[in-house]
Length: 105
Image: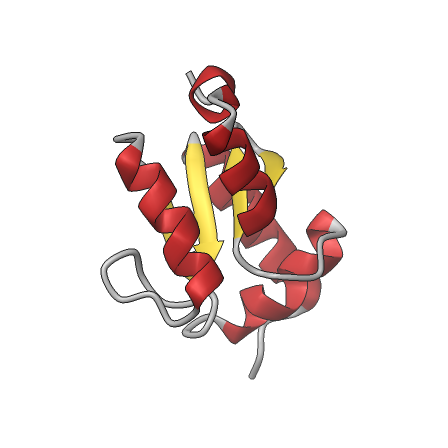
């Protein structure tokens, strides 16, 4: 039996509450399974941020529910203190302008 979407959203809210910085990505930081996820993980590592992650490829219920929750259709999705920062383009732009460190410290 698959968990309901509401159960999955409750799980997502719990993950967001328990992790200051969390990346929903395809694959893992060590073995990303998409270029965009790889780039965001590289940026976070370059900034030496500790972050949690969820591999949405191994959690299809989260992959399906998170875009409904966030109103953001694509992955990766980076959250800080429960708030969506954005996807790859936004994270890279914040990093290039120096605003990512500002925002996440």
